Image (cartoon, rainbow, N blue to C red; front, side, top):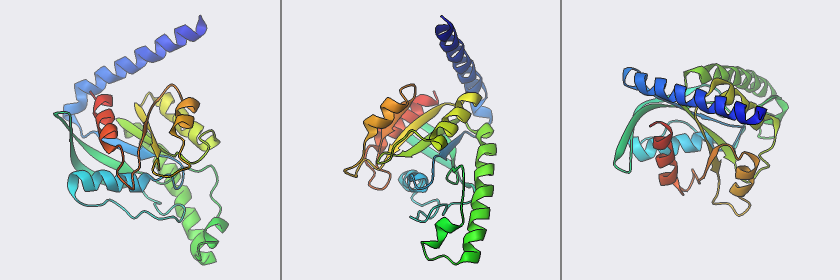
Length: 217
């Protein structure tokens, strides 16, 4: 009984938030954030969206952890799908991590002094990313579909979004790889909408765009 009551209350809060968002949507710029753990493909997704609708990239994607260490924003993106359109600001955020060790950068040939600076900047970026959550109208949580989704970072991100009642889509990225397991992510987090894509190859982007529009009706 307690569980049903909690679900009812949660659903009611989401409906109220949706109504409020709809009332004020025309009066402010919509903000869609891209969040997720390190190297899940967040900037690659941001670049894909920007290229599809603006013809230009947003940032630099790299195999080096925490290449994105500051909030990156691309304004006034107009997306169209199923005869509908949506104009929004896209926010690409640094990878969320519970611990950032400068030694992790040394294996990529980065000098010790520079590695320490990167770690410092990355830590600051994570803090800023969490602060920006309160400004989001929708968040895409990008997960690497080749990795185990059950970990402290992912649970922390989803918990922060739930606490703020922010609409979210789980983006299961890298489905072009043989080891991809989007089904595992869906089973791990059955309460959320999960869309499998390849940001790098552009697979299933139409499904993601439709889901984004549906989430912001």
